Image 1 (cartoon, rainbow, N blue to C red):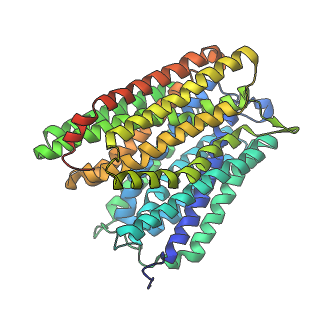
Image 2 (spheres, rainbow, N blue to C red; image 1 turned 90 degrees about the vertical axis):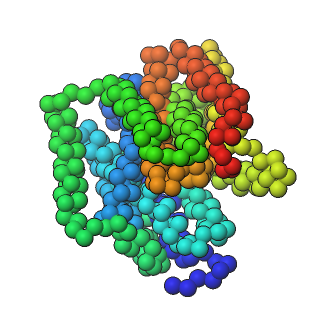
Image 3 (tube, rainbow, N blue to C red; image 1 turned 180 degrees about the horizontal axis):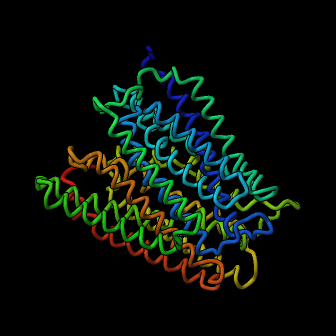
Length: 486
């Protein structure tokens, strides 16, 4: 399939709309999740406490990131990228429609299906985008920029649709709408899949005999299904808060073990070890950042629902609509930030990696300082204007634009060549750890502990702000460890 040098491959538009509809379904459902879990059973919710609901939310979002690791491995060894995206989308749609069934066991089964499906689709659709541009270069960068806009377009629209249906009519209508969105994406993908050509058609590392791997996959899925059945039937009693705490400890232990092995037993050269230390700093900064940023769907969503004045001209805005703000801000400001970096680079003033990370954390802390004041006013005088949340999200998005794309790019540059794939796994591990911490932190600033909201928001602000200041102080020595990598 021939494409002119100044045009994007037609396959990009196939992947753009597939990812747009998938993100629409994901963020649409995510905007409902905690609100549905804490709503009373009389109103169709699960009647869970805030602490338990936000812990489940943390486990779910952490699972989405962790599942990307086996999802990418399955595509490389068995399925190929194209089939991984298709079957991942099918699992996601099945998960959303299962969530639409008004039964508690169906709810948890639906979450598991969405996690497994997202793990298949999310990492592999990005890989397919890269494979459409084998020549690399500026055209590839522009292609990823367009693809990134598709992600945020879906993330902006999803909460508007799903929250309106879920909050105003029936929670399960919102979940069903997310499923319909994914089905539309699948239909579009199937009809235009030929535009992808040979990209991701064959698994690049498929062994001669795939039988043992398939057997392992079946056994792993069987173990997940059996464990879920034992929990649902009450044979095994699990406390979500306890599970989040233990999962956090396990991930921290895995990270310590991996970095210890890589530094002392992987036979890396001195320069590689120094860059690995920088990746460790990236890991810690990313985990801290996501522990605050990913409270958008939990504590900040509850703040919108309970403490924010949402009635305009007689219409009460669904609380989940605020979940669209980060995506809208990314669409508006990402090109501005990218242009700013180019301009500063031309004048030799482009900030170093560590400075960008530090300011990302400081902006996140600034957003929570806004909420400290907003929550104090809400507790003292009642519901506050939406401007408190809007400004918080704006600061958080500026922090994301400083930390997330820069960190991802830097990991690919700093990683030792033979550990490159593992380093991307470490990046996903940091996001997973951050989401677990977000679930724990969110449970302590709402519900029965609502009076402590300002203090808890302040603790998050102080923790992330102090980390940002430490990074600023260490910017020069860390830059020397990078060995010329920018």
